[in-house]
Image 1 (spheres, rainbow, N blue to C red):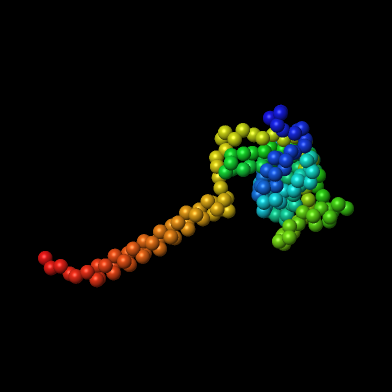
Image 2 (image 1 turned 120 degrees about the vertical axis):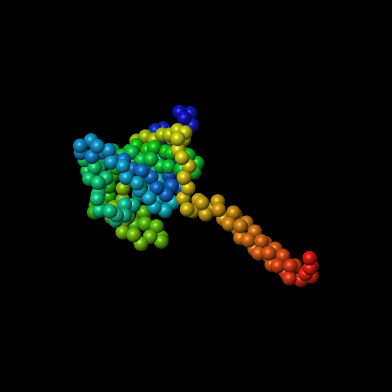
Length: 188
């Protein structure tokens, strides 16, 4: 890894691509009492932006109104992120420091730049993470899991083949019924 990975606080092309293809990640913060808090964040693929090799960010939408992570960041801006690719049993861990933009001079432009074209959700803030380190973790005990989208791609050919076989089966049954009705009855 020392030979192939870029310096610890600069994400290389592989890490940047991996992050931009994710539709979720896990985020850990630390409370004032020292307890860890882990939260799942999700969105469409690409909702996590790589702004440069040392800076990533995401739009924080109106949600469950608990604001636990935000409260933790007021006290301690350290964060740990886990990006998972379950089908390929791959995970990327990032350590960094959070910068929250809400109701400040940079917030309106950041919110505008993080909004996708087909997005109607309310973005309350943008959270930027200054990368301080990262690591690809061992894939050994990652159980493969698949999204509905990934399953649809895999199952589409199977469904097409099944539909074709059902049509063929119906045609063969019709031919058999026709053969039975057209053949002379033999008396025993």
